[in-house]
Length: 269
Image 1 (cartoon, rainbow, N blue to C red):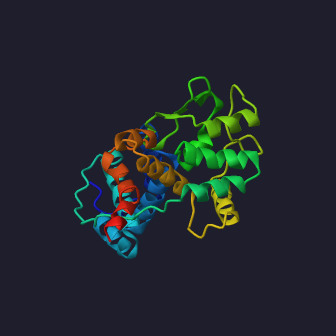
Image 2 (tube, one colour):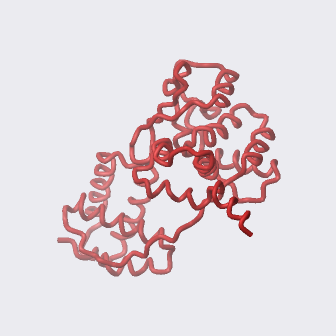
Image 3 (cartoon, rainbow, N blue to C red):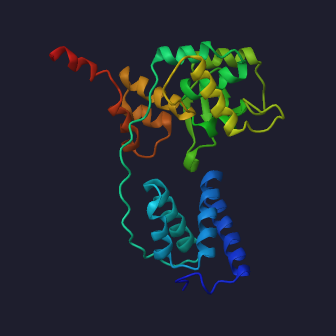
């Protein structure tokens, strides 16, 4: 049993990381998750420390980082070493963070200020379909059903495919850009996947041009999609499906920012 990393040779470390990569691939973990787990496990193997002591080193990091390190080691022990991960270091529950949400007017200003057709399509997919950044990057023409007004989202977090509606605004932009039968919906100038940083900059610049002072990210548009649906009376379970959330509790965060009921309380003052 591996209780610490002092006796592990460089060659053994190399072999263990190779096995870790294989296990991550078998479980179809996302690229970002795999990259993070590999990084933390590499640091752990080089640290010459026990899991307990290595976790203690993370004490000054955020709760989110601490949890990620913990689950990286847990995955490594259980799936690569085939050993129980017995550490019981208490993990504080993540604090409730209320998501930033844009008004419809702010979103309209962002789209109006964006003249580049591809950039406008990216913004529209983030808001009118509620897609994650990586889902937009991986969306292909074959995933679009123009006749039935549906989008088949295949590359998703947790590998859970889902169907979302094709909004008329997105449909109009697709027609303007020219309908294709294959290939990426929003490819880079070289034909490959759009760079994540590029999409982040598209959103940032659009929000700045629209005069929005909030910290707007690609996920802000997804938050706004869910909140606006909830404010307009859409059942939260439908929203859960559209967002691809495994647990309803994840979707319920939007009840904290939806103002359809909150604003009504003002009449009692």
